[in-house]
Length: 249
Image (tube, rainbow, N blue to C red):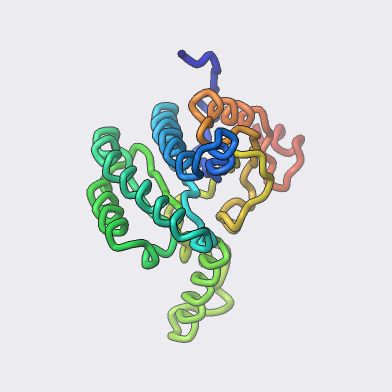
């Protein structure tokens, strides 16, 4: 069915980040194994990626697997890795056709060799694409990312390549996985929970946040467009007053 939601083409967010939550709970409500929810959730990923490219979003970051998710039962982790590998294999051709660039945020050294091989190949083959950048946050934790950035900056100071007094926001941003990309304009979390869960803590400082009760397996095009529409109704002030913004127009 064709969506009737009308968006302002001049106010499409450049970067949208999504915490894809609710797969396991969605499956449990249907008396299915948790992995069933993740498998159906992969269809939502495909739908949201295609919709993002269609409406002009330039960067889409999906929280696919956190650094804390390694603590889940081994059978579930193994199943999630197999789903990820299958998704990458099945979607590579579509990403190439639709000019989508794949990037990964996170500690890929912890990924199984088979998954990492397919991931690296997908990243390499889509590196020149520039319509939409799809960031998959895998084995990702924002605190780990910030610690990594701090260590890198300390080493630069020790070597004399950087002076302490020259450290600023850009210095830190340039050491993060998202270097070269704008911060998210909109952060969406599905599944009814209202927390950040160690996701892009530095980058979402001024992001608009949208929480929805919709579980990720049911988060498809129309629900996504509703979130974009809600974003377009908001006034982004970045610490200024509404009158200041109006005066600048």
